[in-house]
Image 1 (cartoon, one colour):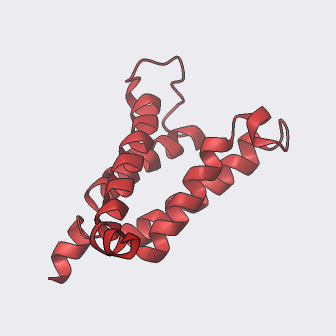
Image 2 (cartoon, rainbow, N blue to C red):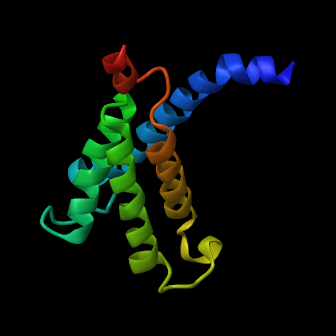
Image 3 (cartoon, rainbow, N blue to C red):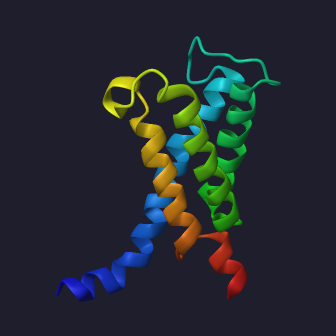
Length: 129
């Protein structure tokens, strides 16, 4: 029974995971670039945080629709690894203390997408058919 469910719904759930995670991720970029949702964090565009905001917003949009999922996810995975080691790890090695648990989760989630692709509900899949 469980193989029937995973076979039928596995590829669709991969797309759901990609869509939901990219929506949340691109909100971080929208906050940095546009201050929406409201935040006090508005880094200069030409800074590391500004570059991060650009990658979060536009990379998140590309992942949302599943366009060039593998290369975009690979770049974003690396960005999140750099973010963790540059901004979170110096505060403490423990993610629950340094606030870097989301960075670690995004890093490995995007690495997963870089390996498996965007799923059936993606522009990548539509281009292949």
